[in-house]
Image (cartoon, rainbow, N blue to C red; front, side, top):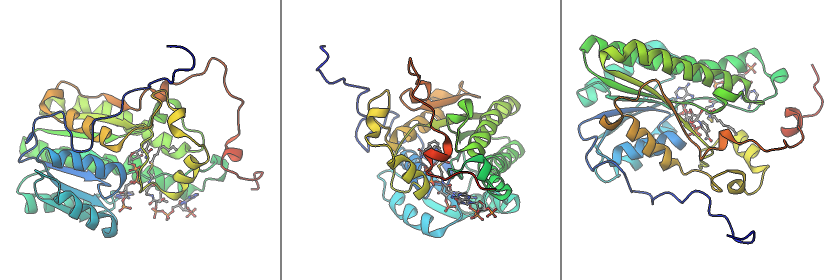
Length: 299
Ligand SMILES: CCCCC/C=C/C(=O)SCCNC(=O)CCNC(=O)[C@H](O)C(C)(C)COP(=O)(O)OP(=O)(O)OC[C@H]1O[C@@H](n2cnc3c(N)ncnc32)[C@H](O)[C@@H]1OP(=O)(O)O
Ligand SMILES: NC(=O)C1=CN([C@@H]2O[C@H](COP(=O)(O)OP(=O)(O)OC[C@H]3O[C@@H](n4cnc5c(N)ncnc54)[C@H](OP(=O)(O)O)[C@@H]3O)[C@@H](O)[C@H]2O)C=CC1
């Protein structure tokens, strides 16, 4: 290969609708996806549905849930799809959601995908106490409260289950401009490690799953604007391409499958090695305020 030949990068994913697990692998199983009405949560839900799962989508806004319900019910092979409005910061409401799951589907969720999270870019010196709390309460405490209810119900029934918590790679590296979300995701990673050990003896598997850059139409305006500042996102990844949301879905369906039953307490990163990227000589530092087009700090 000479220097003029374009590099291939990592190969393109199989087309939408393809799957690695056998058809019907999740027949008769119920999968609860928080934030399953939008973006990556919806893509993950679709891959479980394609393998026969019934779905319970949970989030705060019916305008997110209703279209997703309609679309996911049409996935070939899918089981019944229902949804529940719930703010995952509300432990009492979460208990009602699990009651509703049993009433509608006749069983506890077999798989819990903690996908819902909150985030916005902000220099830490500008972050309000309430802004910090909103992101940490949704991303970390909400994940804990959902997982706690799932664990309590299965322990009481003596049934097995699988939990997947969606994280972010700045759990390891820190996330300048996203200090609240990075701290919360570090907490989520730690929670996975604690609970996998606590609940392994009861047959409950707990793993983390981290997406790389997987653009989708539901990205919040703040995050989209940040990404749009840098042209050619493919060229900025070691894979020479961004990820497709279905690639996260395939990883999730594997992690909760019988073929991954001995994997627990692990956080799997699906990002084409982007989070490991280091240059031999670093680019000059751009302060976060400048990256976010903020003027000088004014208390
Ligand atoms: C490019 C790298 C990113 C990679 C990693 C990505 C990770 C992700 O998590 S993407 C997922 C993003 N999706 C979402 O965040 C969807 C849900 N988000 C929301 O609902 C809101 O954005 C929320 C986080 C603010 C939560 O809503 P709510 O509980 O209703 O909170 P409030 O609107 O009452 O606001 C609370 C508090 O936060 C301050 N605030 C809200 N937005 C911003 C903002 N864009 N910038 C700065 N501060 C913000 C708001 O002002 C409130 O604070 P006080 O004014 O002090 O009361
Ligand atoms: N997109 C990316 O590039 C990356 C994403 N991630 C992670 O992937 C996951 C999905 O992100 P993405 O799809 O991009 O984001 P979205 O903004 O599309 O999804 C967030 C979802 O969370 C739900 N949600 C937010 N707050 C609450 C709450 N208090 N209670 C219940 N549901 C809530 C929202 O629904 P509603 O408003 O209806 O409540 C929405 O469906 C998140 O965990 C995120 O941190 C990690 C790294 C990169």
